[in-house]
Length: 414
Image 1 (cartoon, helix red, strand yellow):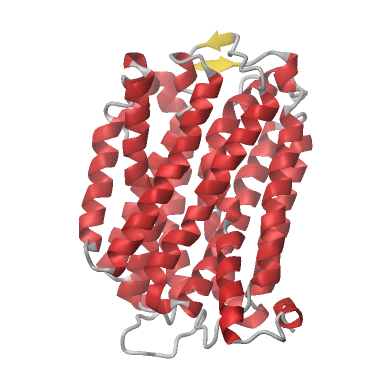
Image 2: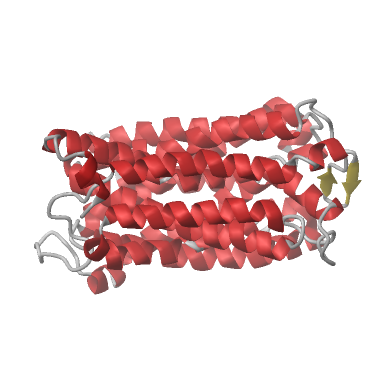
């Protein structure tokens, strides 16, 4: 029996639907790490350098975390595609909750003993939780509100950036309340060596764990399987593709490659906005504010484009062109913007956020509209296959490119 059956037996179908859709907005919260990590990364890298007891921590960096995070979403999505009908969405929501909690809580200990273990927890384990949560949320949206799937997809994917905005304020206010500046600059990085800051790094991971776990537990209690949900083998409607047909479609690969390209840029922007900015803008609170603006802009973009999709104001091809063009043009200017002024850096980051804000909405809407609902969960998960390969490749390239040609060369790769 579903847990929601015990909680909602006295409610009619309308309230069950409303609760399930609220749950869809909350179960996706592990994705907030994609926007909060860029603000957390300078503190983690400083902690590895000055507090980690394992040999090699001081010379390492956490560049791989976001790459593993996005790449590891694929196993979680595939798990949902195969198991949703067999075990139910509430149980899969619980899996996401437990994995996310494990990753954040355990990493508060591993940051002091092993950078590699922390990277696996925050990247791979947390990524599986994220992928599970995303696919559960998308099935709920497409099952309970198929007529407004674009709008609800936009609103669901707005929750993680909004949560990241709150998390970024909490992280900086807790770790660096006095707005202390990085006091060590080496090569292409700036570090904090102040004990006052380093002492708080493990604790802030526990705070993030508490915030994310709280929202996911509530989501698990609210969600319920939508009626006649098709998540494994379709009903064979003429408007739906089989998984193999979708995999052979050129549109599938265009959609997947677009996601891979924009994900590469998203990781680079989110991961370096503060680390790179600190080299030229020493105000930590100001850069935290900038990191916090990113998710809010992406929220507005998602909502806007979700409505435009549903009203057929913009075609999917229009959005692909806008997204790719902004990503390419603005990354060619990334290196120079903070050297000009903070205002120039702000405008550049906001422009990139318009490009990247379309990512999850566009990918989801193309998958549903082109390939149909019958095998949505599996096609959606397979679409991340190309993306996973791309972000793993990027993880191996970021540090060598940065060390050989510097930040300018790294940004130009976009």
